[in-house]
Structure formats: structure tokens, C-alpha cells
Image (cartoon, rainbow, N blue to C red; front, side):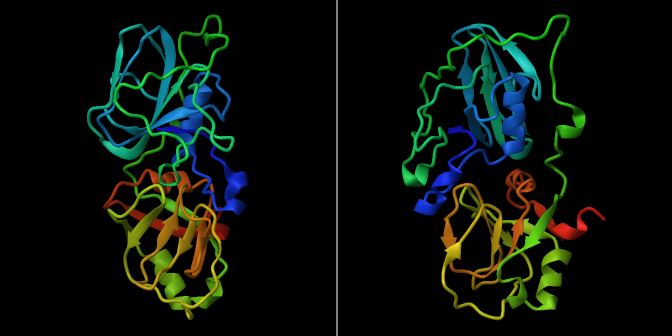
Length: 276
């Protein structure tokens, strides 16, 4: 489905921000082609997608490794009738396909991002014809043979990420023992994880109070429901919630969590300590 920078200015009306689950990979796919960072890309979940080029064009594929038939993390020139295939996922969850100029996608509340639960945008289906935004064609600078992303920017999605967390509104409602348990253990990503939220499994936590008035949520908020198992709010998550909020995953680390497949372990660290 199409995704871009999302629609954060509509949160006060109860509309989730949406946008690319891994904004790091999506931004690099656009940057390789000199697209604006807000240009729509196609977000792919796991494996099985296939695309046929109807005309010569430049594309870039970044994100999860689904055995792409074209080189990843670099600008690639496609010829008419060439096919891009993503047959088998090897690491990560979300893959991004960008085209020169960005995809020509309809805007809903100022964004091309598809929010399927809210019926904003239309998910792509087999047989759809995708167009690029009209404009000057992409060209590599003179005497430059190719363009690729630096190795240090190509994240290892098989590694257990250490995610920075800022204290949340109900931080003091949790005991020191529970706060320590949250940071010391390795949590497991559960199958009940999607664009709304990632559910984690581990030693149960318990705040001092469960009853509270619903209050605003932001992407990355770590809520602790009554079973004591954390839920991290993601791009299509609700804008308000009534569970205690232990912390908020740093905005730059949400993309790392998004690329964790079910069963993958994740660990957290207080944001203030991350630079030590």
C-alpha cells in the first residue's frame, strides 16, 4: 500500500498519523532518487509481491530483505517489461519501493498514506497500474556510475535492537522493581502485532493503579494493559488510551521495532543513558 510522511496534524480529530512503519528505510529509498522525503512509496509486508515495469524508469528498494530481484539500497535502472519480485522474506518485515519522482497517489487529508481500518485510501490489489509523478526524469550526476546507501545506514534486522525509551506519564506509578524488570529483560514480539501496535511478551508488570482517564497517545507509547504485557503503539494506533503509560520509545527507534518479526527479542534502555 502507499505510505508517505503520514498525517500527524489530524491527531486531534482522532485520526492516527499512519505513514511508513520504517521511515528510515522509506526515506532512503526516496533519497536515492532525489525525491522529496514526503514522496509516496509502496510499503510491502513480508513477501510475495511482484511488479512489472511498463516503461523505462529508475527505482530504489530499501528495508526488509525479501530476496528482491533487483539490488537493494541503491538506485536501479529498470527497462520496460522487467519485473521486480520479492519471493521470500529473510530478515525484517517491511520493504519499500520508490520510483523516480514518487508515486502519483491520491491524497486523503493531505497524505497518500493508506489507513485501511479508517478507510482512508485504497490498498493496492493485483492488476493495479501505478503511475509516477510527472516531472524531470532522474539522472545520475555526470561521471557517477551508481548510487547506493552507505553500509552503516543499512540496518541489521536480525540483531536484537536496544531501543531508547523516555519516561511516560505514569512512570512513577510503577515500582522500582517493575521499572527494572522492563529494562533488564528481553521481550518477545507477539503474533498479535500490526500497524496499530506491537504486543510484547515477558515478565508481567503492574502499575500502582489501573483506573485512569483516557489521555492522548503518540507513536511509540508503551502501554501496560491489565495482563501486564506491554503494547507499543505504532503508526495506525489510537490517538487516546486509558492504560498506564510506562514510557515512550524514542521516535528514531520506532522504525527499528517495526522491523522485528514475531518471535524476535527486543530490549529497552532509558533514553538518558543511551549516550553514556
